[in-house]
Image (cartoon, rainbow, N blue to C red; front, side):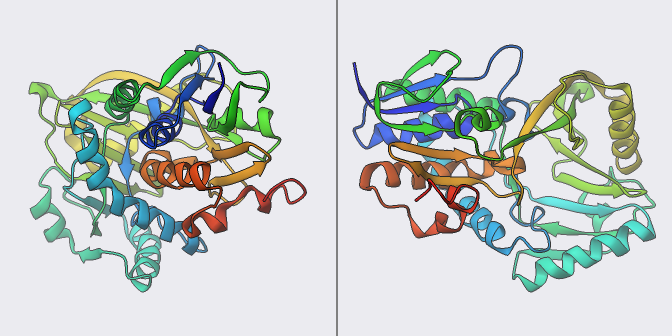
Length: 354
């Protein structure tokens, strides 16, 4: 049997693309390429939807894509509602600096984000503590960003159910090459995309922690992203009592959780929110983000019937709706939407890309 589309990769990106293609009437098979014990990055991710807090110097085109993706999330969540609660929350993100040096460095970034017109509001220490009394009394200042969050594990389950409802087949199989029985092959295999396409997608190791709040309710509601003596950390509270603490960025390929990473994450986290010392340490996670040389995703036709949707790095969950829409449009019409024109594989593989 020949499918219209074969999607290589069973993470958030691959499943979202498969669902969108199936909604257009295409027959789709997903090849869940990730070998055990590796997990897709989206299974390990914290799920911050942060176009504001993730806006960095020199990445204006990527920031525009992140903002566009965030704008599609409410409708995306509404469509997925029949298939499960994805943990979408709109409380916002507090950006917090613990020391004077932390505040000076963060303020430069906030100024840049303000110039871009992003929704960010400066807050003094009193205003921060009024919003989140659990913050350490000596925080020096911060800002409120209009960012949201979702639970990637719940999102994966909902996307799989949505795909099944639209007759998407999922085959657990490691793909050795792209000679698959389909008119179009979409490579959305995260770090595994490099071996299949030759594109420069590298694994960036990340370690994060999952804590459980006493009584099942975290003592804060905003996502908190901060700097504690120049140590970056983020805290993501879930409605079910979980708090995700992350994450390291290491140019390593191993899957070994290290005591040093746990120590650094907990030290920075408890410096910002002291009550976390009383939370249970439930899980230490290790995953690999699919990074690219310019930190931006690779989206578009590689050659012939091969399309790529990979290299999402820290932004896979946020970019899932816009990536799925764009790739489904490309597969259906043969034309890439203007929104992804700056992110095609041609910038890395000019000889074969279009």
